[in-house]
Length: 176
Image (cartoon, helix red, strand yellow):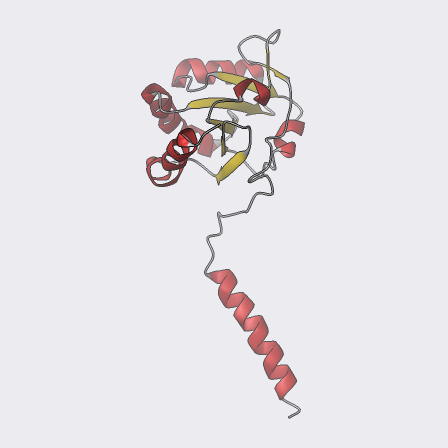
């Protein structure tokens, strides 16, 4: 009987560890899912006298992609986003995170610009409001301005075809 409690504790801890080891380490649940996209107004990369706010996208399903020229994974993801933008399947808004403005402009000129607009998050506060862990991160936002999905890491063609684009199609089909 004196071994029953330690054995029970051991089995309980073992069960938690076993469950944890079977989870996808890239999956980090976002507290924003199902909630309104954090509101902000930031200058755009192309013209600092112009601003962007998520409220401008109400009525549309769109992707919000946080990126930086300093981010190696962003460079790997970029051709996928350019191809997606060229397909016209969904609008993509960029958030250039804590970056050098001239480097970001050169990056988009050289590699292609998949974004309908890019907001500049020079101090990083907006990224933090969105629950940003590390670039790149991509969010799917619905017509009502609710965050419906968060993808951490570079978006691959497989991610697009298996998760993101089916969700975009589903959200577009919803009323409202």
